[in-house]
Length: 179
Image (cartoon, rainbow, N blue to C red):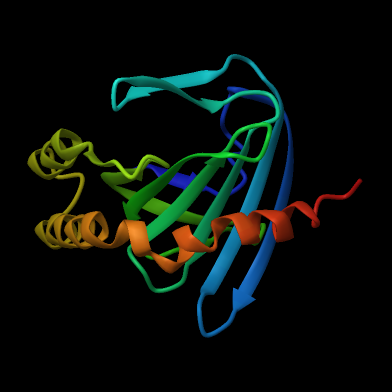
């Protein structure tokens, strides 16, 4: 299983970034919200989805990530340099932890759900999940959890409260950057 940290400290693609983190405890959401702004990248990251090339990482792009406590998912909203949503990327994972620096992380359970602004939804990496089970990298319980959570998220992602409030939270998180 891959461990993914909110600050992406180990990602070689990023040359320079700004990072903000806040903890939220409200009736709508309990957990962490992080924001990374990519000030300089080694090279952009582009994928093809729905027959279109979608840039996910470039100079000026931002990733805002929700780390809900006691859940089996984390949602990353990708914003371009104009603040437009490029996609919502949902990692199915073990519940969130924090490292010795206080930075949230999750252990990835391989399956991912992607929602594009067009409304199209994709379930990714089913083959990786099968391989992880076959090679003993995950247990049968983890496999079952991943499948159930991904199925639920595919049906609920368009109306998920964190997807619906992502633009509002993006504006709030940008204010945490030190000028």
